Length: 166
Image (cartoon, rainbow, N blue to C red; front, side):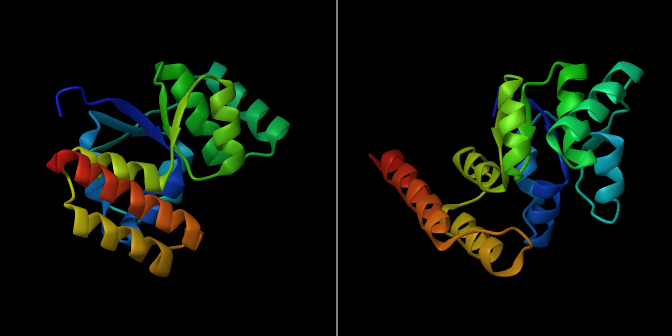
């Protein structure tokens, strides 16, 4: 993929993709960076290529503001602040409130499912493999995933595959 992007992640997608042995989904991104708090929250997980970037004082203050004002987890607030500090427009989070706040700051947001679908479209996973990963995500991971969302995701994958075959 020639136009690989830089992205910041909070803990959720790293944890969930690790739980289903699908961390290679992150390979489509040029740089995956995380702040200190996310590093602490995911310290026992090994995802190759993740870079830890420290926040400067201004962005530590923004983190405190975001955490207090919006009741965000500290890792989520640090991830949004890191996007601002590093001028990175792509954020990975599964948290609804963090997604809402990130969009307010003009960030493009994807969750674990979105990362899997993007990596499938980039050729990291074959159709059957990504569908199996999505099913594992629902059955074995700590991510709450409804049957409707799982069905929608599988439908997106199958439609993309049909579009490729034409």
